Image 1 (cartoon, rainbow, N blue to C red):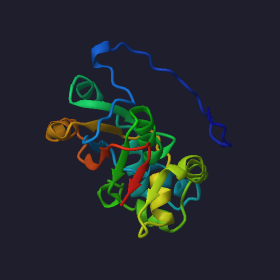
Image 2: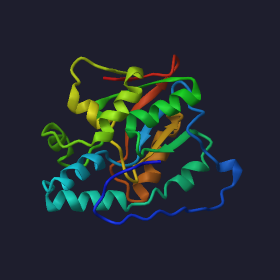
Image 3: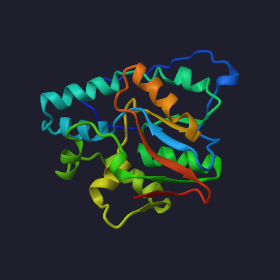
Image 4: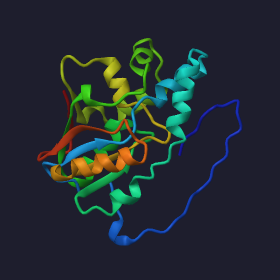
Length: 210
């Protein structure tokens, strides 16, 4: 669970549904050679940090609301695909943390290309200006020892990789032959920012970012 101080009232709810067990996908089962696809751009945590300090533009606020209120409906069709080997959503642990969970659950490693990561417009600049959440640093403290960053990547990139997402995008590990189909499913449902961001490899459960 999470404990926060907030001036706004907060309520919780649980959504319970039914799924065909044959279509159930988990954050495990990824295979070496799988491509990694992210369904939504990153940066909601950074935008929320700027909002709390009253430094978020109207456009940034609109982008944050649009992202967090967009339901991950492509998961229904992705779950039915045999070529999709692992599937999860990126939330509080950030992209790096949830990818690391897939690696640990699948006994594989992963590589990411930072320049391929989709970002909400303006997020990188806000992160560079110091608008990051406390959770981002705590995330990195918890799992950063299993993440390798290229020398050219610094604090800004690290904070974006560990940026906690509210209603973050789906993270898909699929057979390379299914990339076009997966992207078309995202695109058809309005997820134009979906992108191939890396791949799965054999090796210990680590994430390398170039």
